[in-house]
Image 1 (cartoon, rainbow, N blue to C red):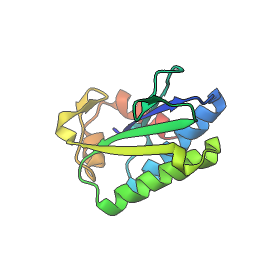
Image 2: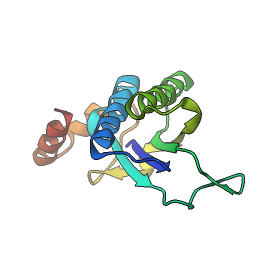
Image 3: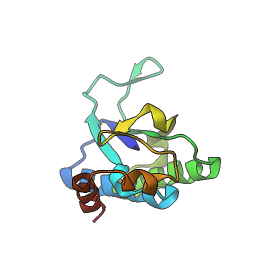
Length: 146
């Protein structure tokens, strides 16, 4: 957790741009929330031409939608900083205007999610959770932090 799904229409995003944007979103989440980077996933989905509609009409312009599923318990200030940071990161990496960027956050209760085979901790309890993991998994997660 978090999982950020990036969907985009009428836009070509190179592998390099995807990598840069994934790093940017991961960093923004880490800095804003304090959660370890190994929790962050970023998944890209390109929407096929004529498969995206607004107001019942086919979208013709470049649009990008980020849906972030995050652990519940964050303050309004943290969530505002997170969505603005993501929007600004998208603008910087992809050179999109802010009116073409949509960012939504969804709060999920940590005890309703399993990652790396374990129920997730509440925000702020990551170290306690990490300390209970197997040595092999700890190594894997530490390697992802680098």
